[in-house]
Image 1: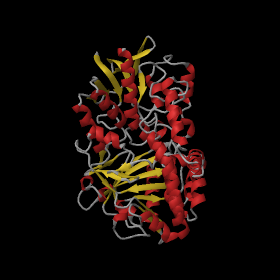
Image 2: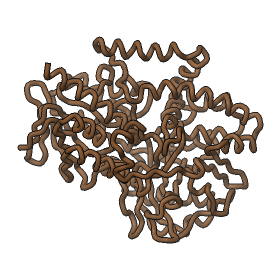
Image 3: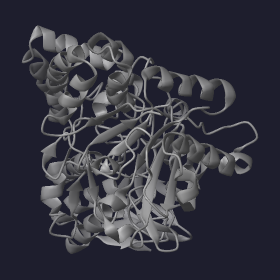
Image 4: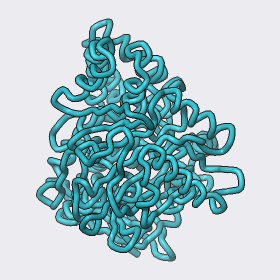
Length: 526
């Protein structure tokens, strides 16, 4: 039997962040990880001889700067470089759109429409006013429904923040929290490809259309980050996303955290109505507090013993919406792709390459998936990280990440019969924009939603640990009354992306959950 102050289930990035903060306060922390490597979905693995790449999460922007500073991740080996261009939207013809820093986005929009370039200034101002208040709440627990004085004070802070906004800014806040991305973008912009540039963020990891109410918030969620100290920028971690979690593991171990790999947790031990440890393959680990860095449905349906929480909690969590209809691929390339709209090699190949030239295209991708099982013309974001990082592929060759939608968890005939067919379909889609791409593919890894679930515990293949809709955000994540990281079982806490502020490689849920654990330990000592 092992004995520790806090046991953490899962060594994904949020668990590592939580462990670091707890150990920094002198607690003995033990992490139990099911896989043979730390990192959860933020890992780098070889997928073809000589070719390595990030396996699930694949780009840097949302990782919280306070977490980076506190854990001294750069000192522990992390290096983040910026994309030379943020995004590249090709077409099958001669048109394309670029976006990036130093006025590039506005110049590119102006090349398509002077009116849209003027509207871009107003759109950016409306975004900034809303993002500002969101950033204030990233590292705070949201007001907890039915809570005590601390939650009343949190609600007052939120109210003060909103009152500090002008009336027009409050209108923007309401719009972005309730409307579809298309509602907002079509109000500002007239050009299809300009609308698509911004609308893509509204469907990333979201099984929906840009015309689906609530997709405007998903758009926002992808914009509050920074990379290499540049707000709103996107970057690449040298060595892939696993370099982030390897640096986190070094920081945690330096503080005394014990990380035990190849150790899946079977069940949370409950005694006297309280979580007091976990069981793993016949061994038990006793702890004063148990922190779960797992998907909420896994927690309540697999790890919490039957009868340990009220029936209404079980019933509610059984309805937790969790599906992002994501198909994830890595491909090994003999050469760089040449896009019809911009064929020569250049900085645009360091960008997020978005194959989705209009909101209507994205809408059809969703409707096809709902009706026919998957998208006839899928939405694809391709990154070629080897343009920024020579460590990932042999000299003169490259790796590409393909993040593809919409491919639901359940498809006609099942995924075992369709996985390779869909992978071919996606490669054909890219080849239509970059002829010769298909011939350059010399190896690939194809992960359907069921594979993302089996490998990383992403129930339904959902990259965010649950839909980022209004009914599953802020004080309702993962449910009203338990948005403060304290679960409806004393001694049990949630620190993963199923807690506020949600998905992405942010570290924020781990940071915030650690504060809840530390607050409760101070109460124990009184």
